[in-house]
Image (cartoon, rainbow, N blue to C red):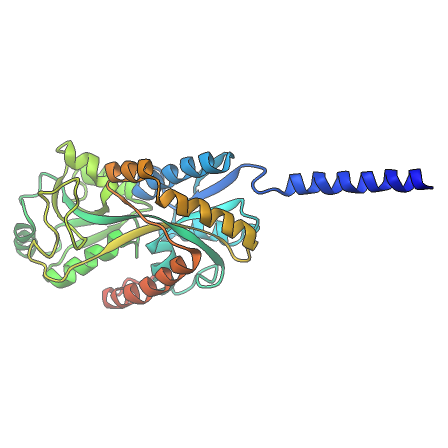
Length: 322
């Protein structure tokens, strides 16, 4: 009898040990949903994050682009995914703080269906024009737009994205009539800007930087409070004469609602370490971004605060989507 009991005990312990090992997070690849097409800033920074997270966790992190509807399609994929830490969203201020006031109806509850994990990077937007536009600074662009109302086409990554709303803020403050043309991501919009089908765009800084350096686009101003170190000769919008203009953009990671606390803590800790990594900070600066970090609670607070701020501009612009 003792032998049988001993054998049963060993079997139970073996099963428990195997279960613990199988349940150690992560024990398989992680899917990172990027809710915009390849080629844009969200995709670029998302892939940098995926690479670093894979190095940190020792597991593959697979980027899956699910573009459309200003990030709503990709966000919905994550909102409805199992809350096991294996499906994450590389979110933006647009997907997490703007879409709630922009869309009249969403297929998820933007306030309740996500678990904030942490911030990753921040960027300004940059006002760029095709070189065919006869404006070498913001004031010349304003004058040209007033002389040619409705003739300039402004691209964006989609209705209600920071590209769009940065442009709407400019139109309102500069009192100009410019046509907004929404795309399914900044990558496709950039392609048309380069071919002069669009004349201007408030693109995320990393996406536009290579084209500015190559002379394919002309940079007129950045939307941040201070100049970007990568383009020190480009003024802020405020310095360029649109006084009080500021529009910053951030990128962070969220998961589905109800993620286990130990997984939240693990991912948050990894992201906090990324925020202190000098090599990663330098790489982000080269791309035109700045490293950001914070606890899940701090990230949640940032989401709420920016939702209130951008809701005012959404209402003022009338940029609602059914």
